[in-house]
Image 1 (cartoon, rainbow, N blue to C red):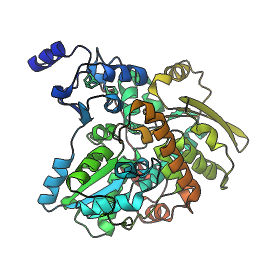
Image 2 (image 1 turned 90 degrees about the vertical axis):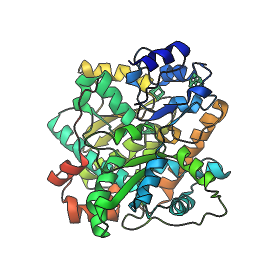
Image 3 (image 1 turned 135 degrees about the vertical axis):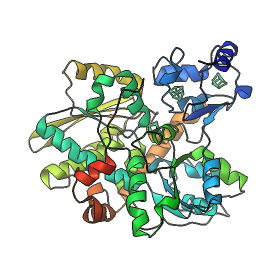
Image 4 (image 1 turned 180 degrees about the vertical axis):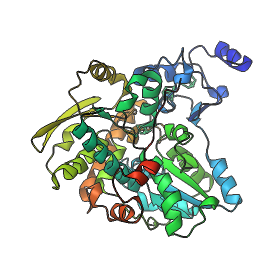
Length: 435
Ligand code: SF4
Ligand code: SF4
Ligand code: SF4
């Protein structure tokens, strides 16, 4: 720890210490009143002994949402994007499912209102050449992870499979529970997969010079800023959170009324309903089980009780039967609830084949890069955003990731087989203990 850090610790007794190299969060000391709310939030939700070990920070940004003075913010990405634009790079962005039910809130819309066309229009207006849908990456993740689950169940190896789409959770496992790393899915997150496929496939199909592109994920998530710095996550150049985007639009005086409605650029127009559910806790599992069921039986099952997974007490389980075999899943929506499940795995007594963990309250709809509310309103807002995504899943023509025609095409053209050599090279990863 350097001299400056020691000085900072002396002044702030209660605030979390954020080093300058924290990849997700930055702190403005001049605004900090040392109230300790950031530390309380972290202890309540993440339980990583942040006071003693600031290096354990998961960059999840939940403390941003409770800081009363806005001293905490997502680490800025805008300057890098503007710089890339000045250098004449082609700007390509992709939007996460969870922000399309919150973007309108910045312009007076009710939380949960589905606002994708205005969001695309706004992104075009500030200079993005191509706007794509990260639901494509989510659908790809579902297919690869469903096949991975099928193989693990067949070989009875590394079960339960633990989901890997939340970078805060992945860091938690690598730092705190390294002996359980083999249970993490080897799938990159939707953004990890999307970035790879934009640079390896989209650019080639669209005849864009990939060396002269700058790719940006528009997300509800500060931890994704950390994820894209990992050596194996190479396709995404920057992560811009919802709140950074809204500040940018307001500075450019872009309003709801002067923002045109636009649609996503081809090739990837729209993902499945299952892909949209990645924005809420339980959604990854719901989508995964839909496709896993199809891979095992060749049938689409509509009546699995997915809704029971979408409740909010932080921990839910579900049992489904697939070819006379019972598959048990657990969904955890706060890291504070995970310890007993990890102990069961350690003691070889876990009853589950799948465990989904999302760090933030409600999943990515409650991410640290989302628009902030008074604490008394937060739960209601998260509930409405969740309802918005669930309604979307029911409305869309394609509910199953494996039915998405764009996904079928990329396997025909490029990836060839699920979990095959090419897919493993670009869409999967390994992990190592980080501390
Ligand atoms: S919550 Fe905000 S104001 Fe309070 S101690 Fe933390 S950074 Fe400072
Ligand atoms: S970003 Fe998340 S892990 Fe880091 S201090 Fe804040 S709440 Fe804790
Ligand atoms: S739950 Fe979603 S928003 Fe929160 S840290 Fe994980 S990926 Fe990011």
